[in-house]
Image 1 (cartoon, one colour):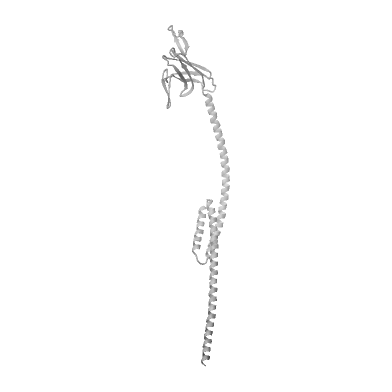
Image 2 (spheres, rainbow, N blue to C red):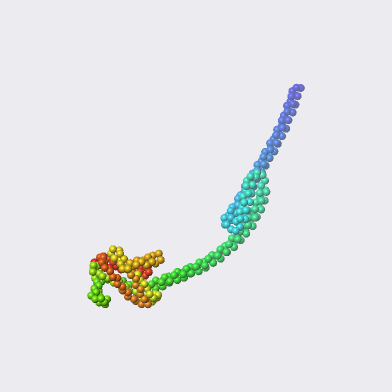
Length: 297
């Protein structure tokens, strides 16, 4: 009797355990299924988030490239680019549904297409204006070069005329003379050329003004400077100022020039001439136009 009761109790316990086991199995299966669903949803969410983020990054790159072109729409493009950057920041912080980010991306993308179309139109217009401007620049540059050539030719012609109109001094010579005066009349003076310093009484400086048909005629004054071997200026030793420059000279001679050859000869009296090399310079105002040298023994 007792054995029968024990068997019945044991069967009851086994039945309860079996029911519990089946329940546990069912619960475990449900939990596992829920976990898989959650993991699938999470994977899907992550994948969608990455996709939207990639799309936003591409959108930002498009704006960056357009802004780098520095067009008149740069300010508007920067504003839209900043909206994309802000949405990327919000998306990176989100942990839930990304559908709202998709819709915002689509709106930003549509704005981008409209702005890009407008920007492209402006670029074409700018290109056309640039071509027109370059064409104008080429014409102006060519005109400027032509004008520069004409100015240069005119300057060269003016310089040629100026150079050609200057008088040439040639045949500059200096000789020393002994002057003997047996009488009172100058016509009775006897002049003997010498190269001895101790015997010289006078230096004679002569030169020729060459013929020049385009030079300006009229009185021409030349300043003659004679420097002895001791570096002394002989003669009048006067000083003439020409602006900031000054010239110490032996004598000045004025000639009436009428575009024909003129021979000039002047005497420079003196005494106690030093031995050595003498230098003779002829100046037209402060410009040296001829020079020579000679020696006295």
